[in-house]
Image (cartoon, rainbow, N blue to C red; front, side, top):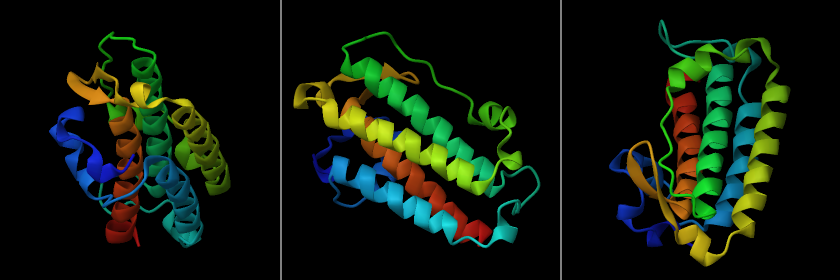
Length: 171
């Protein structure tokens, strides 16, 4: 499935910038390509920037990487539940509470990237295992309708959004 074929009624307007920024990409291919792109990108960040905060109260790069990992896990859980035809509305989460309860700043970049890789590889297996019917299933998350396939594109767009933030505000 191509991102440009995703109907806008399969995700909340809040996620439109993530999906629109992808251009025309294939879901499975881009899940893999963006994994390698992210790792390469982070490995090229100067070591002295990992603990940098561009303003008071903002997350450092390690915390953002942990946020990307945590968010991807939550999105994957939503995709799994919805793909299995579970119609239970799924709650949102407070990203600040999650980051405030990590030890990301005490972790090495290699450890964070290894975890990101493991999570993304797991999600690749999940999305590869789904039928067209399962990918099109729609459930409710954060009080909005969302399809399984939209969740996959949102994962990628969320990651790319934070890469852009790194470039614009941290480097």
